Each structure stands twice: as C-alpha cells, then as structure tokens.
Image (cartoon, rainbow, N blue to C red; front, top):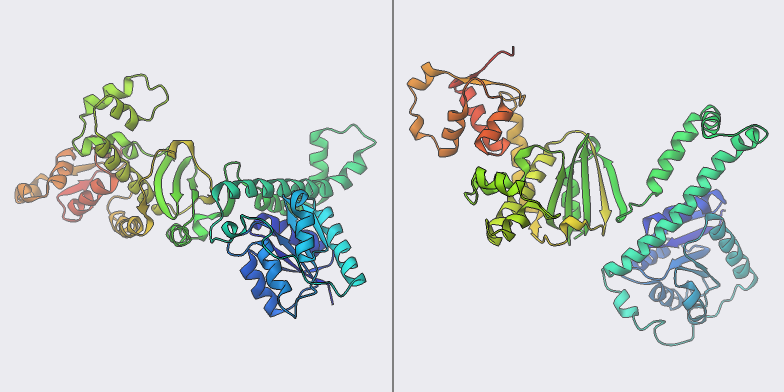
Length: 463
C-alpha cells in the first residue's frame, strides 16, 4: 500500500503543487484546506504523515497540531511544518508539537519530496513520538489567526508565497519538457524557432497539456486567481451568487472578445463595476442626462476640459456641476446596468481574483447586494429573449406605420414610450435611436418590440 500523506494548506496553488510532486513520487495524497477539514480527513483514515501550513483560517497549524496530539489515535502521527515563517518559528513549533521537520516557503517540488521522504524515514526510525509538552500558544497572535477570515494583508503575503511556489513548479514543468529536445539540439546552433519546432514535433498533446497545467498554476499579478472558466460552461448568475454567499473580496473579470466588464467585490457586495469597449450607453454621462442632472451641452463642455487623470464623475463633482448624491445614483445605475448587460453574454471567459483591488475602485463603496442586482438582471435577460424576436439587430431601421398610428392615442403612452416612438423616423438605426434618446438599450428596445408587435412601426428592408 502506498504511503498516504495529508497536505493541509489554505492555498489552492500550494495544495496543487505539493499534490502533483508527491503523486509523481509514488505517494497517495489527501488534501485539506484548513485545520477543521484536516480533522475530518483524519477521522476518515489516518495518514502516514501530515504536511501542515501555519497560518490558516478556522483552525491554524498550531491548533491543528494540538488537536492531533490530544487524540490518542493520532498522538504519534509525524508532522512537518510548511511555512514562510519556518526560519523563525521552526524550533518552537517542533518543540511544542513534536514535529519531525519543517520546510520554508517557497519550495520546489523536489524539495517537498525530499523533506517528505526524510520525515517518513525519521518517523519510522522513532515510531514512538512523544506528544507536545510545552504549554501555551506558539504565538500571541494565534487567537487572531483562528478567526474565520484571514486578515487581507496577511492573505496578500500568502498569495505571494503561492506565486513563488507556482513559479518554481512551472519552471520545473517547462524544464522537464524542454530538456530532451534541447539535448538533441545541443550540438547544433540553437535558436527559439528550432527549439519550438523540436518541441512541437516531439508531442503536441504533451505541449497542450503543459500549457493547461501552467494556466492553472499561474496566479494573477493583482490577486490569486481562484476561479476561471468559460461563460458557455457556467452561469454568471450562479457564479455571482456563490461569491456573495462566500462573502468574497476581489475582482470578477468577464470578457467577450474586446469587451470587458469587471465587478469589484468586497465581502460579497458590489463596490463598483468597470468596463472596456462597451457601448456608449453605459458611460456615466448618459445616466446623469437621463436623471436631469446635466444637459448634453454641459456634459460635452465638461468632457473637453483637461481631466488631470480624474474620472468624469469626479471632474463634474469638482466643477460643481453635479452633487455627490447625483454622482452616487449615476454610479449605481451604471454599475447595475453593466451587470445586466454582462448577464446577457452567452460566450466569453471569466476569472475571479481573490483580494485583487483595482486603483479605479479604491474610492467607490456602493455596497450593492448581488441578490437584488441579479433579480433585475435575470428578469431582463428573459425579456431580452422576447424582445429579440422583433429587435434582433441594433443596425435595424424602423419606420412609423402612420395608418395604424392615426387610429392610436399616442398621448396615452408612458413618457419613455412616447420618446422612443418620436425617435423612429425611418432613418435612424436602433443603435442611433438609443444614443439619440439617451435611454438604456433595454429601455429603448422594449417599446420598439411592443410597437413592432402591435404593427405601429415596421422594420425596413436593408439597402
């Protein structure tokens, strides 16, 4: 039977790197994300060795070691500490927990395999480990570290450790694949192209597998990527609900071609949503005009004023053209409608970077509950499907059906619907009509659908 190793670390990247290294070395591996989960795994079956991180939520490494030593069935179970603090706390940890060894992060896969083998050999040589005898906590901050959520600054430091571990593992994977081809080319003049050709002819499937491995190992430069995928394989609504339930802090980036929406979260609430290459209707100026806070001329003049790096909302506020309340309301509309638009996307990619913070979002604290935004957004998605039966292309042009309108009381329509109907002139495309009315695309297209269905307007054939 293979030697079983329990790996306990709250970093998914570290768990992944250690698991791969130990599996390749012939060990059986069991994973746990914190001390509490480790206890559950221990109750299922006792491993031959436990590799344990120090700083973890719910139950830290020292508390886990105490729990292990206090249980008669696990009293002599060998432990190895994995921590960036190993150089400072190794002696204390080993003395108080009877751990057999320590390893400092970041470490290479070869190093963790060597330490594991050494620890098992030591444990086999001394099968009756004594339990820890030193009283008290290893660190005065142990109580703080046992709280459900790790401090954000501490987590950033741990994310950097994970990046270093991932970098070492990635380099090793690249080296393993490159070395055979490099050895065959060593007597020739080697350049990037010849090496690339050799690798491709070697094993294309292995090359793709390597690229996939590296993608999973690579943390984001702004935070630790903890969730990635394609929109067509997973509902964005479900992903947002999960992030809210887990009270996550970070940035969810959703991309469809050149279009991008970034939802900035703090404790499961939306701080603000940023975008790139989306339609002009999602710019903050439109919401201010729609609310009557600005005229189109005032907005144009303000946009032509040197910005000095400030966002438009901040510039308008500094010039006294809008109030803080008007700015906040416009940001809420903009943020909400960008999420509504994002939910309509059927293809593209998403990734969530835990604890990432964008500079543009530092002063934005809208605190919008995801549940309420989703309710309206998903309702709109359903209505968009219906609207698309008549308005299936923003380049469509509609003309008024004057015969039908002559028998219809236009004055009885809500004001928004009157505005849309007045803008239908047989020349403007749907996209131009949206810009002309300063309405959201949904607010403009819904009346167009109703008018087209009622035969009050008709789509013109394209020239």
